[in-house]
Image (cartoon, rainbow, N blue to C red; front, top):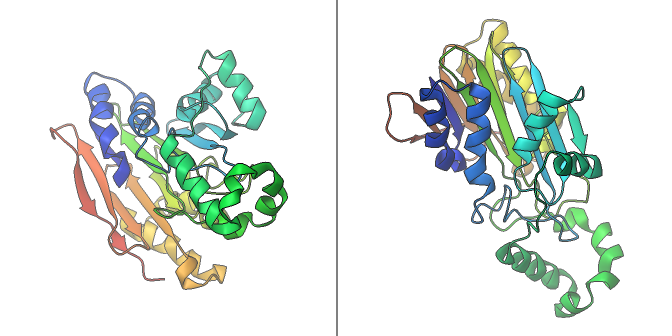
Length: 309
């Protein structure tokens, strides 16, 4: 049994492994792994404390996938519910749909008994206001509504996060039955245009899992993963006989066809084959990822391979 994650997921790995050791499923594990990250106000890319959109509203995205039957559940641009991964799992298990977004996702979360709350932490709100004040002048905070039109028109220019432009957390697990599951949850691109969806809630882009071959999940600039179908491409590479490392490297090569300036290419992936062999790659030269097995007392962090853009 094994679970791998992006580095910021290390705080959830032991909780997930405890579930697997008790006979729980990979789906249960990858959902529970997300909760400590979604609750962490110090992680400005996920859940409570995540940086808001350009209007100061925290919009969350998440997806979960069952590798045994290729079932999936996704939510996008959901506001007011700090555990979108759990809402996504409910979508997968209780609806005939795969994805709900916006008001529909929020209505469904309420129906399932989740409690709505304000997800904009004081620290994230201050960073947001300070950033906008720097753009429009100190009077912005006192007359924000007057600047809505200007905010919307300059959303792209404001979409820069002082810590991480686009962060996320993801998990891939294999349970005691050999079944796989994967999960991704995020607050998305800081200062994004309202309603923007990245790759995290999109099956095949930021998340894909298939018991027969393996799983892959992404963090970084989601638009890249969407345009290249990065997660499913990686899994299909394994289907056609590549090792997990070869599969990831080949999928990353597709990014060269996008014609983007090198300094704009921000992408990270964790991947694992059906036998539990794992590999991770990043355009960041210092990125790590985390993993835990049933023989380990605590998770370990190891370096990702570097992709030279």
